[in-house]
Image 1 (cartoon, rainbow, N blue to C red):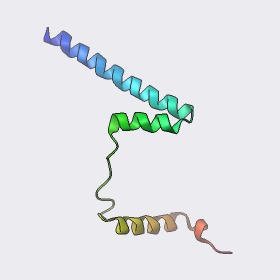
Image 2 (image 1 turned 90 degrees about the vertical axis):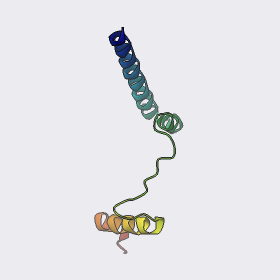
Image 3 (image 1 turned 180 degrees about the horizontal axis):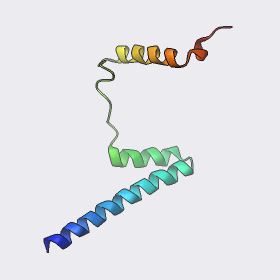
Image 4 (image 1 turned 90 degrees about the horizontal axis):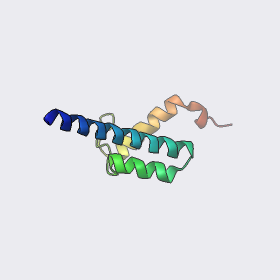
Length: 81
């Protein structure tokens, strides 16, 4: 009896994952960003902000770190004529 229940739960979870993946895929294919993000937030939540990025934990330091990396990888954006 427990084995049947475990299999049923597994099938439901797998089906749920596939349905979710399909809904994200479909939204992306239709270029429907509202539906995509609605599906994303339903699955993963909306308050998943990183607290520490590359050792930095406050907004200013994170922004400065991003700027430094961006300038070093995309210098053509900062060339002046």
